[in-house]
Length: 290
Image (cartoon, one colour):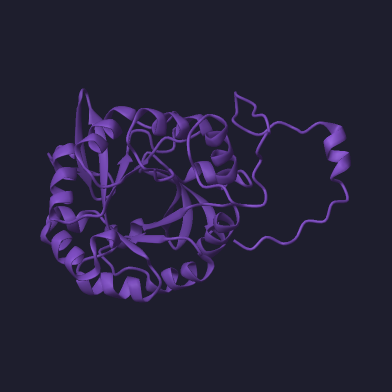
């Protein structure tokens, strides 16, 4: 069985990584290359880099940003934002992207999914779907969550798969930045309707949220942005929590926090016993290269 993937989703605005809240409020975090470097050191499985300005401002993808990010990334790097045609995709791959995330262009010109998958392989093409719940109905939105499309996300995910998408990135606009957990209802519906992997995003605020989405849905990967920015080793902590509670994840970093206890309220690791800390005080640890 494939291991569940923990994915960092980096929202980029004005060339900087930002904390996104509800797709309409953004707080600065820092440089893209530094965020990518730290996440690699902290054991992340994949990174998604989404330049929201590129699409909103109708400009080309930021190829230089992708180049600098790829120099620091030793895990699969997915890039989205500003993509209009196959030439943009070709350039992004040339500049260091491993996979491409398309959203608006897939909605306005669905044939690009088929064309891109035929040229670059479907494993390279991720269709990003932004979803908002209106009363009891889920709807796909475009333009960074601003405009309703009238599309049903389950039907659109199935159509994207039929056209050749290799993965679905399902973003909950309602949950974005709220730390209330993933929207299990829509994730379950979409993941049950397609045979390609579904990456869910929006709402992570505690390691238990990752555990719950893996235990209760068929999502193959869970993405988060804000959750990973403010705690050192946060991806490793999530993976340790998953393994401790029966979910399967890749954990091969030197620091693995196996056998450690968690503070349930916050999801942070609890302090080790003093005798353990005394014992390892002078233990030499080699620099880790991931």
